[in-house]
Length: 523
Image (cartoon, rainbow, N blue to C red; front, side, top):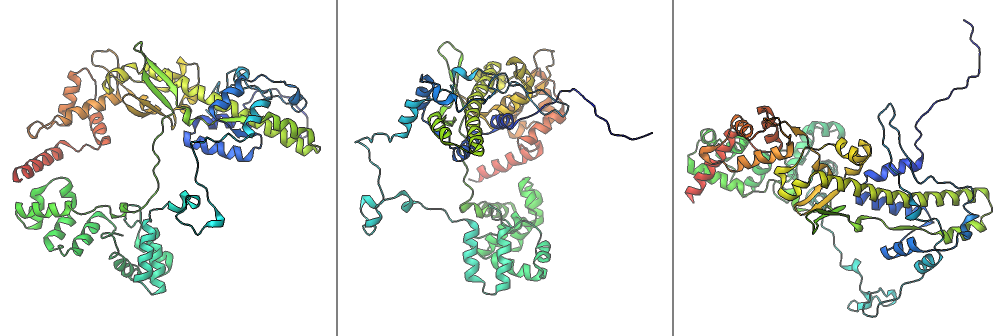
């Protein structure tokens, strides 16, 4: 066989994701906080984008101005803004109709001269409102309102690592021990526990295990009491030792603290060698201790959940669905600035940069609008499918999957999946993530409509909540009760749901109830 070069002409179809299409896909799955951060980055990067308030957007959409200033600058620029579809390929990456709306009636490419000029002008000050200012020339007058600044009164909670480091610098003078101490502090989690193996620390620092343990022993006397323990038993032991209450019986209890979690009081009495009264006193002492001493210090700020969609009951008995406008970034394309700058651009590189910025700015505005429309469309369908849940509660939550919603609104499942990621819905029954409404189905005994897995979990929780000491339900008994209600479920499924809700077994629940009764009788 002779190898020789040759030319061939082949025709085929393939999926090409342009940077703009990749951006549109990315925007769909971002949470409102991530979206805000992304838009802020784009505002800094793109000189043709600027923020606008809601009234500015309304005016910009309705403004009718001359197109002549930008026709020359935009000649040859084509941005496909409708019927952009993704075709699912062999690798399974995709979606369809992410951008399928005609934006000509929403965001026009026409210059908004009056709007941009109004945005550029400073807003008139309200005579009834004044902001304190900083006067650098008269900083000595601390009591003056002109010298006030919010920064001067802001404070930050000290972190656990900073608190421990301050004590380390005072309590330990030896440089080698300080180095070991700093490394150990880096391994302390937010609850105050020391993570990792000390042997690995010794190998990493090139020292002996005895030196690590000696330094740790010194640091375990730091404030707060119980800090830098390696497990719960050691944490409680350190706190009891500080109170001089760590006797052999208490140590035996801490060594077998898992029995306390199981409420196996008989086993603890035998191991500790005490009677019921002494054991109750020991347990009362342990309950007064702090199992997570590190949480008293500053840690990562937890941001509250901000809903993307609001649901409220309509006068006609239906449900009104609306987007939370506070979570939607408001941006405009400065066409006037683009027209002026493009006239002065002489180099080809400058013209290309301006054209790219203009195209990116328009695409971002359109992508944000379509993202909002898609979220609203998916949310409305979810509300329609789960109407019984909003009206009657979690017991009436229907089985629902992505395909049902996708087929109803003529979208691809992957699009719905992206839209429901990190999005929240505020309802009369609370705030829920959109993915909460998608649950698997459990068959019905009579062959009727299937039951939602979430509704079944709620029913199991209700049955267990109604238990008494004499009527504690085993998993088999729960299965029988559910089947009598028309729910076809296996025992292992009940056990899986129970464990997922952190509900202990029937044996442990019976012990807990008996222990609670004995404590109440003592009181």
